[in-house]
Image 1 (cartoon, rainbow over the protein chains, first blue to last red):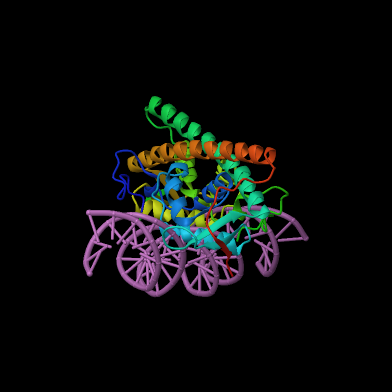
Image 2: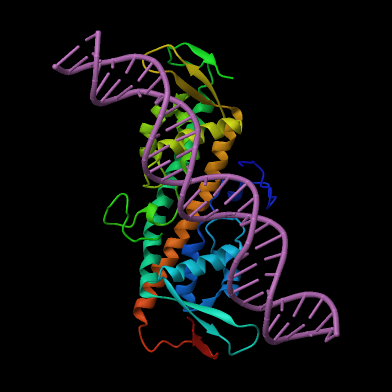
Length: 150
Length: 150
DNA sequence: CCGAAATAGATGCGACTACCATCTATTACG
DNA sequence: CGTAATAGATGGTAGTCGCATCTATTTCGG
């Protein structure tokens, strides 16, 4: 599962989607887009979704529709059919007050996670730099008998 | 699934674990700890894991052990049994060069994701502030016939 | 010297989720 | 009229998460 080069997006730098499943950030982005737009529907959201996405992973249309349905099940959005204009009928969603609250909770959580990640990244950079300096006889502080496994 | 108050950690503020499954950040933290420590084993890592964790979610012992096994399967760490000292035998892990690379890839990815989240949080704060000001007759720009669903 | 607690690692299982492929329908357009 | 675009939805395999539970060894109190 952790392939270094991304099997899907092919780019030259490590890709989110090669790092396991970080795909699950559809929900907060959908909430934010609905907040900004006032109301919208799946097919329309699909466009802007990529721009606001939290990872560079391609966003599944299926995931988007399911997310919307779940959000409705949980009372974060409500929907109505829009049959008026051009094209097939659309299911138009808008935030409920609960949805607004949920969005702000997401912000709180992601703020926290974001800072943790920042700290993590700094830690890694530091560890890498340090280890690359003291490349001497590695003073392994162990006094236990080690036997290679399988 | 998206309960506002955390069912597990009970705290008063929104908790990562109530936001769906963001639990999957065990791998990078384990890699970092191994990098810092040089080598270690599951039970030992379990202690420091919580401090370096990227979310406030409690880290499952099971998840930790499984992560270590997977890391080995993918060539990011190697292990050997340590039967010398006190206590039951330990499976001692250390990073491979591939593991080092993988850690740095995680740093790259999480750096990216962290920045995206930061942007997201700012966007939410802005949207919330703005929407709370123009609480007038909402000028909904729609000209389609809407019918309530279910 | 017995039994409880601590240390250490591991797995079975139900529930949930991801991704892919595929499906239905309606409208637009050449 | 047929194809593309618009719009929404689902089935199914594979994988993962978290809980409960399991084995074993060692330490330590009494």
